Image 1: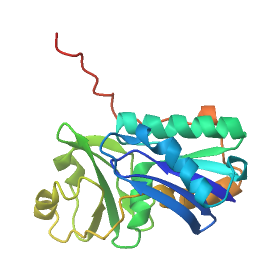
Image 2: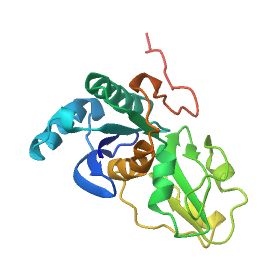
Image 3: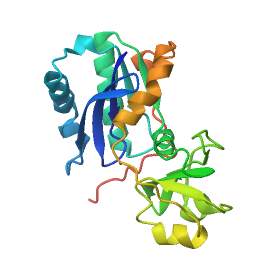
Image 4: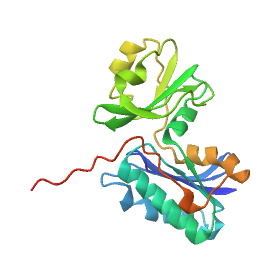
Amino acid sequence: MRILAVDTTTPWGSVALVDGDSTIGEIRLRPPAGHSQWLVSGIEALLRHLSLAPSDIEAFAVTTGPGSFTGLRVGLSTVQGLALAANRPCLGVSTLDALALGIAGHAPVLVPLMDAFRDEVFTCRYDAGARPLGPARATALGAALDGLAGRVAFAGDAVERYRAEIVAACPDALFPNLEPFLAAVVGRMAAPRLARGEGMAPDALRPLYLRDADIRKAAP
């Protein structure tokens, strides 16, 4: 099944075409002006270079958050529009789930940490097989690290920012090398579920917001 996967929830945006466990093609960008400037043209370029038409896409996958409020809306709305026009099923994937899968097997406990700003992180704890051990949340770093001991693997864009604090709280912390571009991982995660018929209509996709958007009035 040819699946077009999109991730725009972090500064590292990507689009990938996957077929089962294989990544057929991928575009990766860290644009300075946000993902809305490149996403549609990037998808068009990927399909053109693979000599595929939009009708050749059999399903869509997209990260639903948490992450940048604007970024995840760009990815979701783009996938919804494409899937609606093509009459294809969609599947949403948690960004934290994708990060955890990328470091699965490295430690008994996996902890993705995404920078949520406001001195907070988006996080969730997983077992070695990347199965959630609790709910995802937005919280202070101290709360995210509370109670962790022994070998714990960390990944995500907040890791470098808080590496010293992580090591102080978890001396045996592991930091596996993980590519920040997630679209191909998201596509491979979605593939078996879509093959089982678990896809949904485009308008059923929902973003995963762990807190309200930080929208402030401009100064007079």
